Amino acid sequence: MTFESLGLSPEILRAITDEGYTTPTPVQVQAIPLVLAGQDVQAAAQTGTGKTAGFTLPILHRLQPMASSSPSPARHPIRCLVLTPTRELAAQVQESVKTYGRHLALRSTVIYGGVAMPPQVKALQAGVEIVVATPGRLLDHVQQKTINLSQVEILVLDEADRMLDMGFIPDIRKIIALLPERRQNLLFSATFSEDIKKLSQGILNNPATVEVARSNTTAEGITQLIYPVEAERKRALLTHLIRTLPIPQAIVFTRTKHGANRLCAQLEKEQIPAAAIHSDKTQSHRMRSLEQFKAGEVSILVATDIAARGLDIDQLPFVINFELPHVPEDYVHRIGRTGRAGSEGCAISLVSPEESRERQAIESLIKQTIREEVSVNFEVVEPVQRPEGRRPPREAEGRSRTDRRPVARQSEVEAVEQVVREPKVPRPVPEVPRSVYSHHHFSRPPLGSSGIKKHREIPALLGGLLKKTP
DNA sequence: AAAAAAT
Image (cartoon, rainbow, N blue to C red; front, side, top):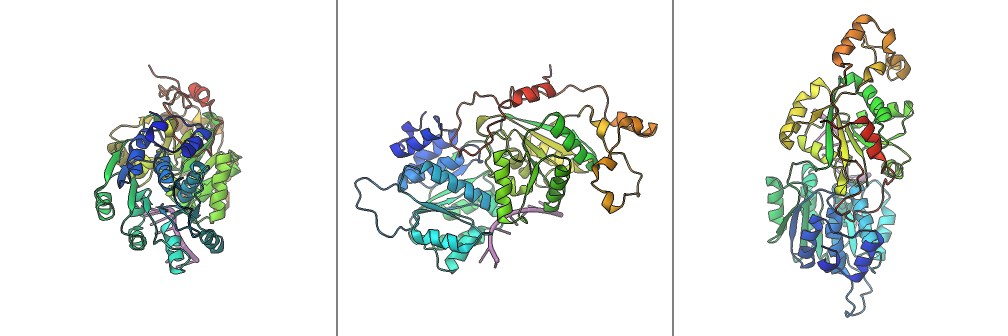
């Protein structure tokens, strides 16, 4: 199967070739012909399956000016509207539109909150055919009458289940009320829950269904590991793993925004370049964090679930759950940030005894037991256990030097306790994907070219650490 | 129970 055989125009094919892609992914093979035919489509697919290009490419094809058509009108109505749950995802989708529309005379812009209004108004006034937006700011423009949606031909709801979770549906209904009744609708969702099916029924007309990956199953090619660890030792274990595996680059998920800030500061104190991303950060900080991470200037991106879905970073080798998510589905989304587009990756979860319920829920959701792993030698630098009720003064917290001591200097009792917790005899180590960076992908879908491409040597790195089991 | 999104 090739992109040519899907019937895309030469200009679009040229952009695809520019990006170095040759073979469409399964979701693209299924979705592109349907979208080209003008069908409504509901698709269950996560980002990383090539979903974004799956709708971007055929939409560009449909909107491109026909060679035979009359000269384009002076005023350019918005012909396609893409709605996404997060600002970052909106930005990413528009990047994709720009990339694949490079050789076409179609213009696009992205609309979201947290940034100044006037530049967006200006872009809209100049005329664009494609708008990618988050719902809130889009409605803001509607109220200010700075946007006209009356000519929209194609509506895309991206990550619809996320938008549902986030309570965007009333906003989306308001937006839809402003669109022409006759239009093409595309709905993408990680899973088809009952709620999503209902939403879909209300919006789509006789949709074709595309389902590539079975819902609630984790992608093949992602090695999942659990490191059991007491909550108060997680930070020490994390830095230990980052240094010893080593982990060149990873997204580390925390449960709260505050937790993300704290962990980020602590990592930096340990000389591990880190950046944090969550909704309390300013939009410019969010963008900078993401850029630094994608450019490799920062090795750890500490994130809340803002980054659990949709973020598309090429060749991300590791995802680390510093804390397990409360909603088991979010585990699937988080680890989906690695092992994308046919490459392989590793998802590590630091799990404390208090999190056993979450762990159980996750394992029953994904219908597998996640392999447990122990970091040999970790006890050497573990923090000294403090007696109950005697916490250090606040200012001493996070002072790494005072937190830890070599084993030799600890009391015998403590040393014995450690041995019990962390047997010296190394347990069989898990099998890691043949190589985290194996090059034999069947295909590498067009997913935007930002990315971390310098970790191809990881198989060697990992091979040393995670030897194969018999 | 937490996070995201308009100001």
